[in-house]
Image (cartoon, rainbow over all chains, first blue to last red; front, side, top):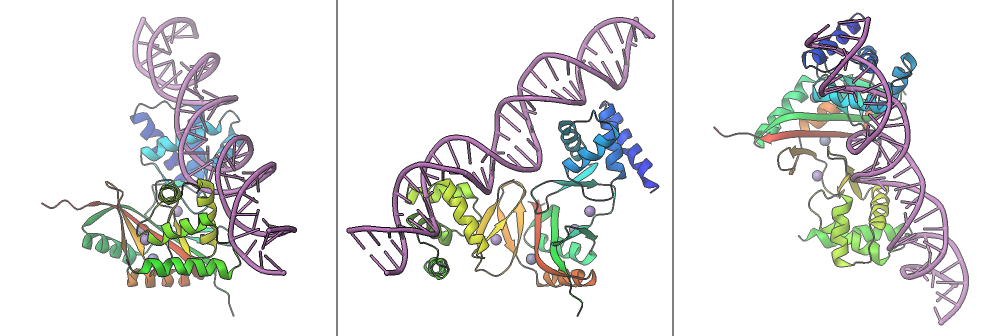
Length: 143
Length: 143
DNA sequence: TGACAGATGCAAATCATTCGCAATAGCATC
DNA sequence: GATGCTATTGCGAATGATTTGCATCTGTCA
Ligand SMILES: [Mn+2]
Ligand SMILES: [Mn+2]
Ligand SMILES: [Zn+2]
Ligand SMILES: [Zn+2]
C-alpha cells in the first residue's frame, strides 16, 4: 500500500505537534498500526511490534493505543470476543459484519442506515455522538 | 405490571421442563428478573435479589444469568460501560439509544433499519444470526 | 424419609487492561 | 557532543468483571 507511509507520517506529526516524545517503541507501534489493514487486538499488535523491536512491551502497546485513541488517530471496537480491537481512523466511516464461523470482519457502509439512525435519534430528541452497528452472521449456504 | 407473574411462570416452566432444579435462590432471581423493566447488570440484580433473600450469592446470580441466557430466556447486552446488562427476552426485538450524560437507555425499533441490515448481509452473502445497534447521544439542546 | 446428583457459597483463579515505581532515554539547551 | 529535566518505559502488582474448584447443602423422586 502507498498510504502506509503517509499514515505513519500523520501519526508522527500529530504526536510531535502535541509535544509528545517520539520514542523508539512508539515509532515501532505507529509503524505497525500504519501497516495494519485488519482489526487487531492489543496482543496481536504487541506480537507484530515485538517482531520488529523486541524491546516493545505489552504495557507500552496499551499505553500507546490509549494515547492514539484519545487523540482520535485510531478507533477502538468492542466486538463480542471480549478484547478491544483497533483500526486506523483515517478511513471513511463504516460498520462491520462478523463471520461467526471464521471470525472474519467484513466492512460495509450504508448511507440509508446512517441517515435513518440520525432521524430516529432526532425524533427521540437526541443528537448521535457515535454509534455501533455490528452484524453477526453466517455465510449463506448455496443450495 | 401484569406481565410479571406470567413472565416468572414462563421462566419457571422452562427450567422445570429442562429438568433443572428450582432452588430458592433461582426462584428469587427469576422473580427479580421478571420484575425488571430496565437493563440491570449482575451486581444490580444481586442487590435486588439480596433484598428479598440474603442467602443469594453473586456467584449464583452469575450462574443463573448464564443459564437463562443459554436457554434464550434473557438477553445479554454489552454497552460501553464494561459490564454485561440483561433484559427479558420475551419482548419484541428493539435496539438502544444510550444517553451519554445520564446513562439512560432508550429503546427503539426501526423496521426499515432491520430490513436494510438483512439486505446488506444478503448482498455480502451472509445470513444475520444476531446484530447489535447502539446509538450513543446527547439530548438535543433546545434553542 | 433417604439417597444422590445437581446447586450453592466462598475463596481463589482468569483475563484483559491499568497502574506504581525505579530505571531509562527523548530532546531542548549549552 | 555533553548535560539536565521530565516524560516514558518495562516490570510486576493491582483491577474489575466474571468464572471456577471444592466441600457442603438441598431439590427431587422413589
Ligand atoms: Mn473497520
Ligand atoms: Mn432493551
Ligand atoms: Zn455506521
Ligand atoms: Zn435491531
